[in-house]
Image (cartoon, rainbow, N blue to C red; front, side):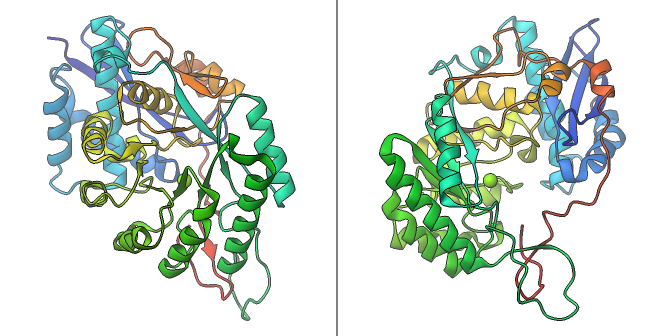
Length: 398
Ligand code: MG
C-alpha cells in the first residue's frame, strides 16, 4: 500500500489573497498530492485544524481509500460540516484524488470517467461606475472570446452610500438597497439593449437584499433573459426560493456559502434552483462535490462551481476537471491568474477564447513551487468589505 507519510498546509498569497494548499506526502519517494483548503478569511484556523487534528488522524493510513478517509475525517470530530473543518478535509481529499490519478498515470478527469466536453466555458466579471463603463467592460471580454459576463454596477450592493447616517454610526461598507437595485436594473437593461443577445448576462446579488426585495428584483430582471441571477437570497432565507419560482422564470444560481448537505439537497430535489455553485473546498472536497453533481444531473440542476480569486489554482484545477466530466455542467466562474500566481503554481488551467482547459499531465496537472510560494507570505488583516451596513448603520450580510 502507498501510505500517507505526512500532511502539510502551505500558506501563500501570490496575488495578495491568502491561500491554503495542502500537500499530502506518501511512503513512495517523490509521490505527493495537492488539495485546496482555502477559507481566506480564516486561513490560520484552517491550518490549525489541518495540522493539529486531521494530520495525526490520517498519517500512516492507505492513501488509496479516499471514501473511507473522507468519512473518517468528517465524523471523527463528532461535530461536522463547519467551514473550517470542511476546508481542512478538502485539502486532504483533493490531494488523495490527485495522488490516485497520478498513480494511474492519467489526468484526473480520465479517472473520473472521461471528459464529455473539451473545455469549460467561463463567465468573467464586468463592473463599472455607470452603465456605459459596464458596457465597455463587457465588450472587452467579448473581444477575448468570452460569451458569459457577470454585470455589476458599483460592486456588491452598488455604489457606496454615504448619506443619511444617524449620529455615531460606525464605519463600514455602506450601501442603499433601493439605489443598488435601480442601478443594477439600469446597467443590465443598458447592456442588453446596446449589445443584444450575443452575450449571456449574469448578476450577483450577494445576499444584499431582504427577501421581498429579492423576489421583486428577480421578477423585474426576467425580461432581460439573464443566464442566471446569483445569491439572490442569504442561506438563512432559502424557503423564499419557492416565492421566486412562483412569480418568474429568472434562472437561480445558489450555493457559494453552503457548508452542509441540508442546505443544497432540498433546493436541488425541490427544483428550486437552476445552478448549484458551491465552493468545493467549503463542502469538504471532490468526494462530496461529485455526489451532489450527480444528484443535480438527476434533477436537472447544472453546476457553476465558485471560482473567484480566493479559490487557489489547485481548487481551480479541481473545478475544471469536474466541469469536463459532468454532463450537467453549466458554467465556470473564473477570475484569472497573475504572473506571480502562475510562477508559484506551475500548470495552472489555461483560458483561451472563453474556454478553460486543465493541464493534461497525470493528476490535477498542477504543481506548487514551495520556494516561490515562500516569497509571497500570507498577511493577517481585518477584512472591511464584509462589514456591509445599511444607511442607518446596522450590519447586513455581505
Ligand atoms: Mg458570487
